[in-house]
Length: 315
Ligand code: UDP
Ligand code: MG
Image (tube, rainbow, N blue to C red):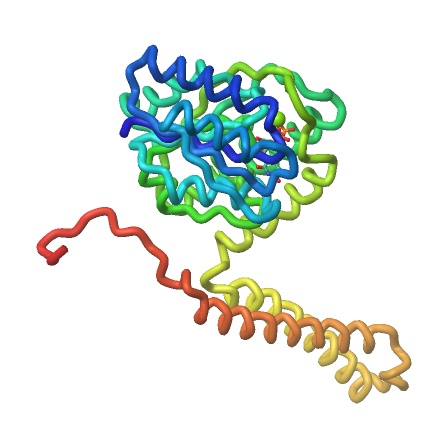
């Protein structure tokens, strides 16, 4: 199969017929063998009934329905598990992404050898103030911390080599960072293509301003987990040592000045409390490090590496 089109959706019943018809048209024009996987993320409108009807008319359409709303990441994760195509395309269900981009996105994977190609909504048709400006900040932060040169991490329209989607797990709200997750898994060829962005035709946006707060928090955790997820003590231990040591030095200074220079009343000096506080923080950090190590050891992902090839070893 050439292509799997994975589409997460939450209350998008109005768009679905038009969207799938358009995709079908593009697939036929290019002679692709394909599947469209629609993941209904617990919609409360008629989305699932619409999917059932669409499947009757076109057996390339497949559906997955969640019992309740789990979020876009969960929907993408399930879609990725089910996808069988050599190239996987993700897109939003709201018709803001154009299916006409699919052939080129696929070509860049198959011919140019990219592992991921991310869409870039260079010209956006969203509310300027609440989306565009925070989004610029957010992308700059993601670029800095991940060193991946993308303008638009969160673009819903992307294409992937099959191996990539089978080796990343998207949880929480991590759909914004799939290129970063993929980079850690060892996929280095990450490309970008300017894509057409359209105004939302039906329905309403599912993300409000909180997305940016959550987005930044997630960027923090994803960077931390990526760096220290498997060796938390290297982070907590370092800071724990620094804190404890500086507290200890202050203490030493106070002691020396009391006994040798006869400064009275060590406990009356503010520095005394600083020393105690800093030493307590230091030991707390150490404890956090030990607990982190225990968790990392018990995590099912502790040896989650991908073997690309083997020589002289029985497969
Ligand atoms: N979506 C989803 N689950 C959610 C929220 C959104 O599957 O909990 C889908 C939504 O139906 C759409 C895509 O994710 O297909 C992008 O959402 P939206 O268009 O609301 O985001 P925006 O374009 O405003 O960034
Ligand atoms: Mg949208």
